[in-house]
Length: 158
Image (cartoon, rainbow, N blue to C red; front, top):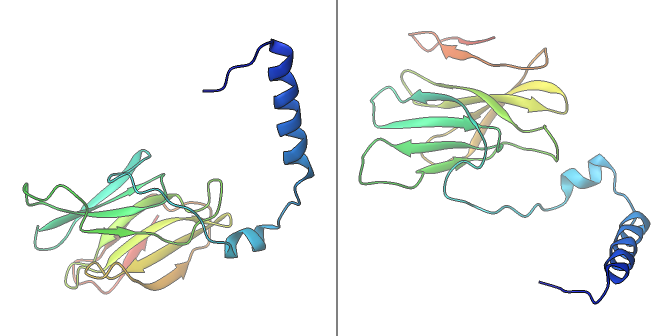
């Protein structure tokens, strides 16, 4: 912790920091999206949970969160860390938050829905590898609920 001899010294330091931040060149949203992002892995969700879905064989559950991740958890009590962490593309701010999840009744493929660039989007993931295998662009602002039909031929989103 830094200490200052006078309150005036602290004020001068904060003014210098604020001025230097304003003088830094600002990057566009497109530049920010292509830049690497530092991610700290806390071991669990760092934001509110939105939805959960169980795989067809009852071995694992997928949770979605405002922290811009979906996590696949084993239902075996001996396993305490996530089996997979699914990370759809995200940007600073609200883009990338995940609001809905559905697990395919036969294949176990995971569909998660959220918002990217202000539009609804559904990402499809392989639950074993955690790799994104598809994307469906939505026609609206938010998708809050999803479900596969029992035969797995349709994904319904609302």
